[in-house]
Length: 103
Image 1 (spheres, rainbow, N blue to C red):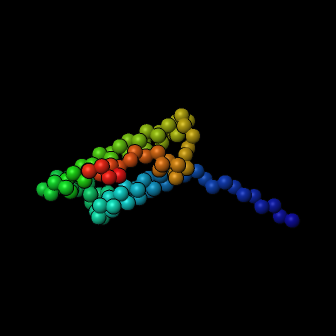
Image 2 (image 1 turned 30 degrees about the horizontal axis):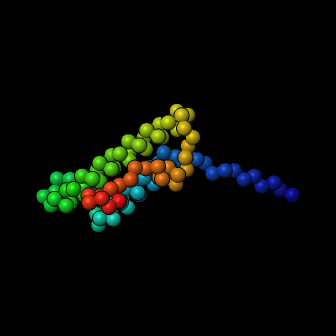
Image 3 (image 1 turned 90 degrees about the vertical axis):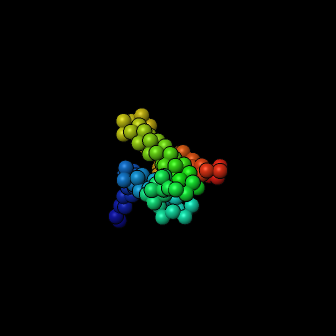
């Protein structure tokens, strides 16, 4: 008879969190028909006021997301907080509010 050892999956890496967050950012930009997060960010100085407003709101939100992410992951790395699952961590992120109040 052989013994099967089941090892728990390794915890997510920083790159795992980063990939999930980049996917969230890209998805949010695509809600407004931009290709991705980089694409919408290029519209900050657009001569079209609607596009410029969307880009400004997005960039502000994107920055808030990354500040939160790095602050919280630093807490994990220094033992000040338990490491969350990726799904749980994504639930903690700041909420995007588009111009006009739509999230």
